[in-house]
Image (cartoon, rainbow, N blue to C red):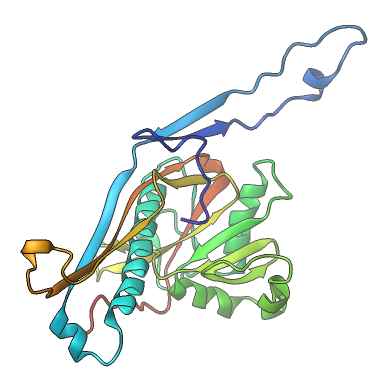
Length: 288
């Protein structure tokens, strides 16, 4: 969420709006002036993108007996887990928007031309990342600093394929740039992030077993926008706050709520790289 663009309007309405400027591509002839002659205006079309945020939220309930039985303060611990879960849900919402926009360019690893053609050896490496940044640079912003978001499984392949001598040390980097959650390193002009919230595509081939294909998102500023009508809110209801519904002060709850929206602002400021991974670790939903 933190990597998206903020909207131009977001409060007081049930929708949010972003401005989108089309890249200007004037020719030398169009920019050549004649002395004493007022040139025609070089108008640039300003578009807008509007979405209606969805209402998201969750809560958990505690009993007084649970609080007395545990050796640590369970409520703050559960609050942190709810916060992490909120981030996972919001990241999933962002990825759903990015992957369902057919205008976003896709680069496949190896020689594949489609997702189901990827083989086990078609993993991501530095050359594939450079293909993505080369595409973005070809859109007219060669001095742009890029960001790339990997799943941990694909980041392992990437790290094994590239020399760490080209990586910028995190300690050095934080002297001139704030370190963001998930940031790993910088290589060339790309800030590298990894997140287990990146969801793989499950491919069901006509022959053989199902396999996962992992997206890696490479983008520049202005690729997509994220917003909430109101900042993510947390709620704690202590024991007894239920009034007559909880006459013996036996229950407490903690939860969160957010109105969240996301939109692709310029599909050519973003590229999705799809590849396989040599490891296939998945987030464990529950511990029994």
